[in-house]
Length: 120
Image 1 (spheres, helix red, strand yellow):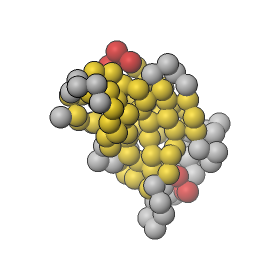
Image 2: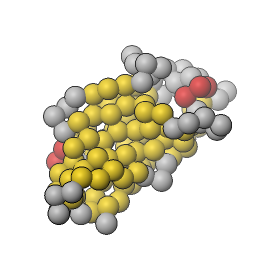
Image 3: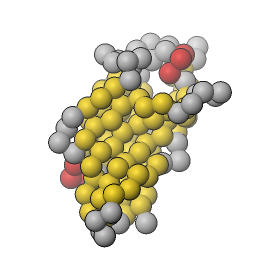
Image 4: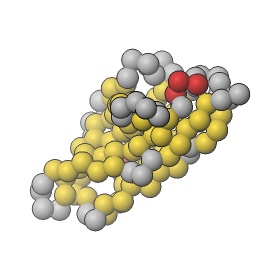
């Protein structure tokens, strides 16, 4: 069993900031990557940002320069600092992890999502 606990969503005005965090626990031998996807109403889920176990990052073009992803490997935690938020950033944000389990298989797992609303 794997758990992803997300926190940090909420309502913020345009131009404001929020910080999302996600901690993974359970039957995890090692985490290969963690990150965030988002899904807005009527749209497909899209990658926001990801970070690998060796610190390589990737971002959606729409968030480059505004969002920063970071990780704490010792705590199996990933954070997303979101600055200069725009109404179009409004979505449910889902934490994900790509990990190696105790039996050496690799898996993907998703959190339940946290709502981010950018509105005046």
